[in-house]
Length: 360
Image (cartoon, rainbow, N blue to C red):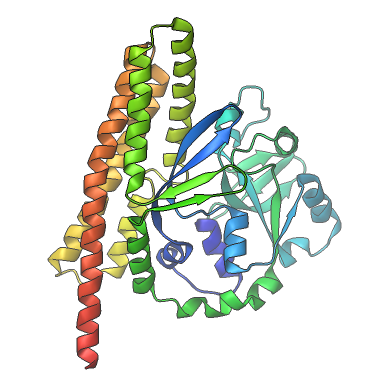
């Protein structure tokens, strides 16, 4: 999201982070079924798809996907390359500030995106831009990137690419010219409507995306099924295979609920509401902000619990208990998020009626 904020900024559009949050699509209640090697994983997705290719194509941004080697060659040979182009590099916290992949669990390799600030040739590093006050604390080893490029370890994409965008073409993009016409309240209303709407999309690459209120039920059934299988399987060999699957599933689950956020994007959403709900005397708006803050807290607590349990769990009973914690969590957030979304829709509908009445 911060990368898209910077991208809009370089295209000459002055938007707040809250506006960018809603323009991208805001929070989602969705899951991805992904066939990874021989198993099907249930991956949570708390925000609209913000992978670079998807976002660029959605907004009609012209871009190139090039290899790491090609980027380095152009960076070194083209005199005005960095001033004419913006480069974005996918990465993962797993590979930040490391010099070799030997001890990195690539089965957990997720994706985030940051602009490349510079190439440190002496240190053999890509320095990533994290905010306006640039430092070199966020970096990727170039040799590690080259290894990742050929490892095909990506979960959602075939390989690692550097995405480059022409700053000149960005400013000429039709979507950029119209972006200020988007109304934040209308975007918020669209997001709230989509949040609970059940949809099912089957992509050609075997990835299935499910959205809406049905998602809670899918996760509850999945974790109950895993717990029952561990509890009732008598064969030690079969139980070991089930446990291996559970460990991978929960590690992916933890990584994706914490990807780019610590509250499954619900904390950022509460901040968006604080900006848009500028009427501090309205009790309904204050209550709705508190609802989303509580929901964010529930997700943060779950992230911490999973982090501890994934490090601590030693026996079958502990893993079963962790699955039961997840089942309880989804029962709770289903009640909280459904109520908060319906309340939000009522607030927006009420404001729209007042606005229409004032025009009559």
